[in-house]
Image 1 (tube, helix red, strand yellow):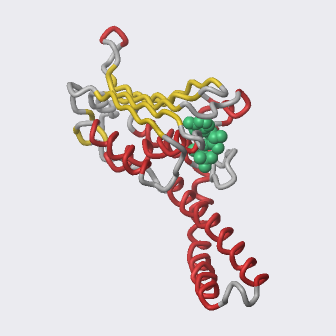
Image 2 (cartoon, protein in one colour; image 1 turned 90 degrees about the vertical axis):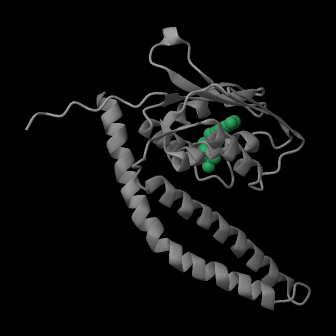
Image 3 (cartoon, protein in one colour; image 1 turned 135 degrees about the vertical axis):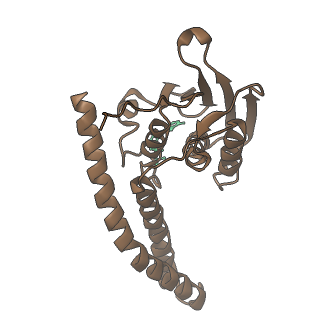
Length: 244
Ligand code: ADP
């Protein structure tokens, strides 16, 4: 419990600092991005290839910074979910669709869905959950640069497992996760990707915990990974308030 508290406090501090830095960096970055784009339009590639190349490099690096700044702002945004009872399947579908449309283009991809149509509504913030699930789908796609199979399941826990929970599982046949990476998976800024921010899973965890749910991972290196999200199907009991 003590370690958990330290983790939360550290996250809050990182979040606050990130937000103010990201905010200050965003506007100058936009000016640089626009200037680079304008210079690229003005200079002719064949006339001065060094200038052209360097501008290209600048453009790419600016894009990388832009990803980071937006990731930071996303990560630092305070999570105050509005949990409204609604069906989960459309949120899962929507997140999958937006990840598939995102421009991450792995090789041949086979997508299968098994979404329980009988699932009752769950208290959730559709926008936040969309963000969390699309991060998981994006990671799955990025883990399969050569293509592969993506499977999405939506169901519920067995009655004997305690209070009813929805189960969302996202399985890819990608690179899998080594034990060293597994240990640091949810740490903010931990990434193995050239263009990664390492904020995706930290954001996912924050959002799922704000829903009183849990997220778990199972992976076999070289074979693939399954992320499982559990979300309560019933509203959390109101917290006992000390009497005035
Ligand atoms: P980012 O995607 O920016 O790297 P994340 O926090 O989303 O940040 O992920 C952290 C790291 O976890 C990734 O860099 C990757 O190494 C690993 N990872 C996450 N999801 C998967 C997955 N489905 N398959 C393999 N590795 C994954």
